[in-house]
Image 1 (cartoon, one colour):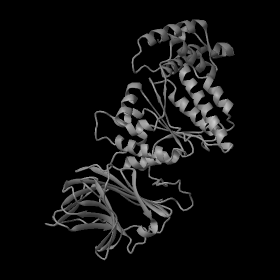
Image 2 (cartoon, rainbow, N blue to C red):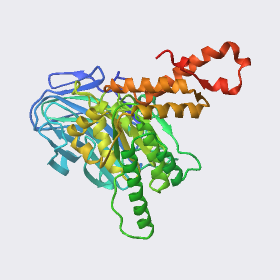
Image 3 (cartoon, one colour):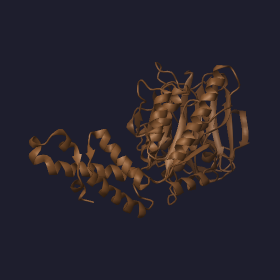
Image 4 (tube, rainbow, N blue to C red):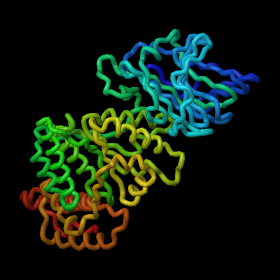
Length: 487
C-alpha cells in the first residue's frame, strides 16, 4: 500500500518554499532544492506529514537525495517522528563518506550511530539512495541498497510527532529527487526483508511477461524437454549435472544430513536466437520439481521493463520485478544493456545495485537468470565484481550449425502441422549453409529459422489459396521449394 509518494513534478504536497539570506527552498524540474546558506553548527528543516504509519509492524521509506554543493564534513538527509524543530529522528550522510542515526530530544542529540564510515556512500556532490525499513521488531537502515545498521523498533518509532522531511547541517545545497513511504496491504503477507507491496501505478511497476510451468509437470518431463532441445550439447550436459547435484542435495535435506548452501542464480550467454528464454523456463520448472521453489514460474523482463525515467523510479521497478519472481525465477534478457558503456550516469547502474542486493537477500526464495550476448556479458561481469560473484554457473550457447537450423525449421513444421517436401529441404540446407558461413554477431540463429518458416507458409498460402477445394490435406500441408523462392 502506498502511503506517501513525491517525485516533485509540482508542489501538490505543499512543501515549504522560501528564499532568504539564510535558506532557500524551491521546486525545480523533478526535484526539491534545499539550500542552507549559513555556515556553522546549525541545521535547517523542511517537513510534511502523511497518514500515520509509525505503528505499523512493516513499512518502507525510500529517499533519493543529491548533494549539489557545500561542505563535505556535515550531514544532510531524512528526518521522521518530528513534532517540532527540537524533537525528531534523523538519518543523515556526509560528503566525506560517513553517516549518522540520531534522536534529537528537546534539542539534545542522542546518537544511535555516531558518524560511522560507509564505503557505499557516493562522496562529495553525488546522488545517494537512503532507505528505512521496519521489519517486525527491528528498523533497518540502507545506503545505496546495502544494510548498514539496524535497531529495535521500540526505540526508533516511539515518536512524539507524525511529520517527516529533510535536514541540512551547515552550509550545504541538497536536491531531493523522490520520497516514497509504503507498507504491505493489511490483508496480504509481507514477503520479508524490505520488499513490500508497492505502488499500483504503472510507472513504478516493472514490465514483464510471466510464464507458468505445465500443470502436471514432472522431473522426467523436464529432462525429456531438455533432451529434445536442438544442439547445445555442452549446455545440456551442464544442466543435467546441475540437476543431479540438486537432487542429491534435496535427498540429503530429506534425511536430515548436512547440505551445501547453494546459489541457484546463473547466466546464459551467447549469440541471439539460441534459446536462452526456453532454457530459463526449463530451469524454473526444474527448480520447482526438485522442491526449491513452490511455483517455478518465470518472470521475463529486460532493460526496458525495469529501467525508470527518473532517479528512484528504477529501484521501485526492480523491487516490483523481484517481488513478482518470489517462488520462481527472474529472467532478465539482454542484461548487458543495464550497463551501457556510452552513458555513465545511466539508471542501469541503479538497477544493478538493487538486483545484486536482492540476489543475496533472497537467494533461497528465488533465482535470477541473466542472459545476453557473449562479449557484452563478459564486459558486464568485469565491470561489476559483485554481480559476477553471485553468478556461480555460466552456460555458453553457441551458434546453431546449418544442420541444427534445418532441424529447428523441421520442428516448426511438425509443431504446426506442415510437411517439408524434399525439394524444400535441399533449398533450406543450402540457405542455412550460406547464412552460417556469413554469420556475424547479429545473426539470428533460431529467430532466422522461424522467420523463414513464417515467410514460407505465407508464400505457400499464396500458391494454394485459389484452388483450396481441389487439394487434399497432404497437399494443403506441403511446403515446396517454390514456397522458398523469396530467399
